[in-house]
Image (tube, rainbow, N blue to C red; front, side):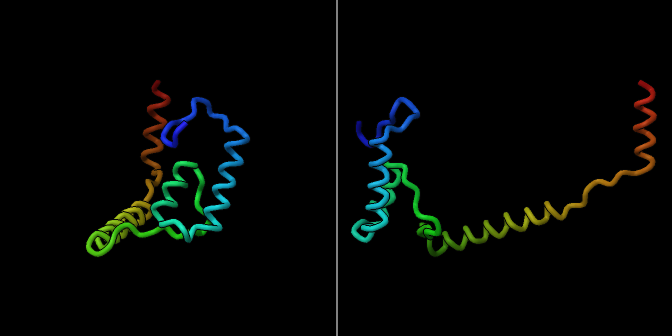
Length: 105
């Protein structure tokens, strides 16, 4: 089975699990021999997550990075405005109308 084919079942054999553990250990101890792209491909093919706390490599730079930062700030501002939106308050007049309509049924 090549790296691009998927296994029909959802179960992973013991040999595959041991192979993934071996590859994972090799990636953590010998990652200086691989470029970041090669390591990413191997992790993707084998389904091996990166170690916790690993910083992701920035793919954008210059103007694109500035635009992404502006987008992030705008999304955060809109979300904060959404959270600060006043919640509807119950009023006595509205409650009496609703009670009257329920009694009318």
